[in-house]
Amino acid sequence: MELDIEIEETTRPSVRYFLTDSEIGNACRAAEELLASHGIDRDATAAALGISPITLKSYSRGVATVSHRRMPAVTLDRIRDLAVDAYWRAAAWPYRQEIGGEQAHLTPVYTAHDCTGLVRDRHPHPLRMREIADKLGGSVRVTWCADPRVTEVPPLDAMAALRSRWRIGVWQLRDQFEFLGRDDADDVLCEIADCDRYSLWSFSTEYRPWLLQVTTSQVERLEAAVADIERGDQIQPWESATARAMAELEDF
Image 1 (tube, rainbow, N blue to C red):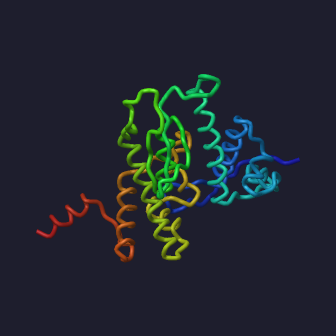
Image 2: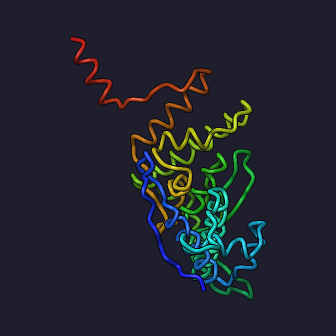
Image 3: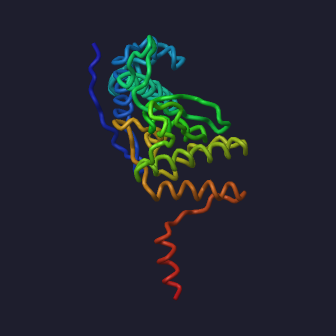
């Protein structure tokens, strides 16, 4: 008999945002529950992840159980992607009705395009399309609307605009690192965001229950790092405009 006894870690990482082993297991279970609510069972999830159902089960067990295994960060990212994809697919259906024997949307439909202009997804929620397009270095467009006057994508509010800038910066940095043959982009991103690898995913999602709101300073640090790389420089220590102004005043 196994007991699911949760034991909190005694050492805390030095970063601001991090997940404990217990929280990693909780995140795995939450993703499985979201998938199950949309008709995707553990066997199907495991197949999509390329692992066995037994391995997936071990990731969600309590940290004190013999069968517990720590889920790799890339696998946690992937299962959360699968769960969020299922959520957004289901979220689109209430906006459709049958017209002339076909399912038609009642609201504008937006498309997410990648950096080459190819359509990668479509959905009635512009934020979902913005997330996908940002991660591909692309754009969002209105592809259909019953009202022909609707041709523009709704503007982002301040918080959503920060998340969009963050995702675009992440894509730019990873693209530059790939071009340079470097594989440490995630390490740099974690340093910029002051987070561990398990928390990094949450800064880029538009699924609110799992969202970590990125801050202005995090976005500015990322954009400064991208600018340094594009100039061919080493990534420089970042300081805010306010800090620079204060430093300049001290020189007088």
